[in-house]
Image (cartoon, rainbow, N blue to C red):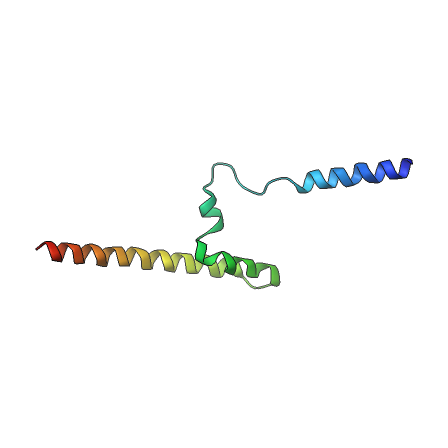
Length: 82
């Protein structure tokens, strides 16, 4: 009976320790996870590939592409007004 109680207490302690959140308070959840397009790439870390590094580079490239597209769209709107 004593062994069973000790095992249950140990198991409960481990369970509670493992349930602690990994998120940092005050940080935007979108910044933690990156863009929607690169979330699957980040999972490559689990099999030994540098998924986070690849995803971060891809995020930056996609952000630059989005900014450039906005600049082109803005220039097109300015041209249409003239």
